[in-house]
Amino acid sequence: MKLFAVLALLIAIVAGVFALQNATPVFVQFLGWQTQASMALVLLVTFALGVLFGFLISLPTMIQRMRKIAHFRSRADQLAYDLAEANRKLSEADTAPQTN
Image 1 (cartoon, one colour):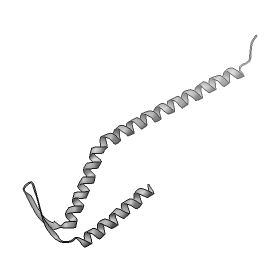
Image 2: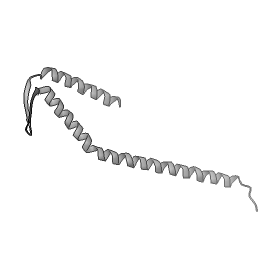
Image 3: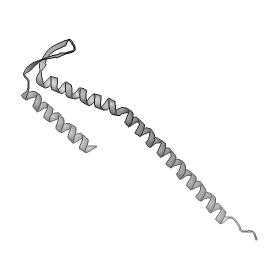
Image 4: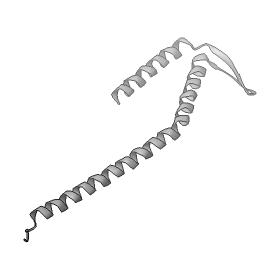
């Protein structure tokens, strides 16, 4: 998690420096919509949209993995309970008086 925070901070610093050095206004036209904005803002918004779309595309896979992990954790807990129960019954059987 620390690596992620350091990487995010580094990207933010680089983006800030980039924005300060590329403040030139550019004309943007897309599907009949048009505006004028700084080049840095246009590129940063484009980058943010790319990150958002990438996240949305990977979301179903992430949800599927989380469900599998939850299923396997539940199964592991059930098996651990069954093992503890079997050990308890075995120890009860070992301590029960032997009748011959």
